[in-house]
Length: 62
Length: 193
Length: 52
Image (cartoon, rainbow over all chains, first blue to last red; front, side, top):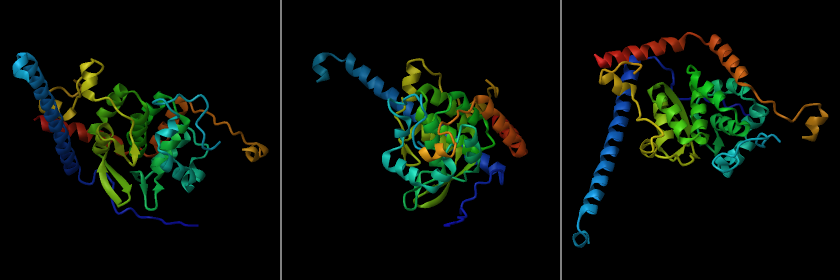
């Protein structure tokens, strides 16, 4: 029987250093929020650009 | 029989739910010892015991061997438990690998609105998750895993079904803006607000 | 499949009910009690500190 009792080399025990674990999460969450904000801003800019072009008279648009 | 989808199963994204796992990997799972010895005849109830014994998430490793996590995912696709059962798995927060499994299944099979509404609150779960892949083991976090499910096309070697963008759903008024417990806290809103 | 039938086993999988699943989780939860509640408390407290 191939019983390769692998001992994972990564510890997934929680609560060893609660403060650090929370802090790490806080930074990850901030990163996600930031990324979402940036994407939203980007979309907003694109929308404005389209609006601006629409508002232009025909000859200038080309 | 052992590999057929439960009778009366709903097609998911227009096909047999098991086909959401691509053929090569699916066949690897059917051939695996774990599948044959531990997944046969599992029910939504007995699967819980297996899921809490899981020690890592991941897709395939080594010589294309599927993880137990992946086997159980396919099992869920096969038996298609009711939605309420999946929600119940998610609620069992002390069993993080069961929760991860449920989250994955929900991402693969639920409607986009439900996916966001059920999974986003889990972004506050910062526990560690062990992941196994071709390179060995690595450490990830529950929130990162959830975020990957919401934003990536491929997680744990599984190609995820297309998920409507959050923004689109917001514009259609199907869903409210994403809430972050952290943001709320920083802005001094009440915790349950 | 035929051999399973011959052994008197059914090849039809019974479906678990929500109640069964809830009971199973409750049972397993009892067995592994301590951890979770402490952690949830921890999270809320830390969030409160962020606010401050």
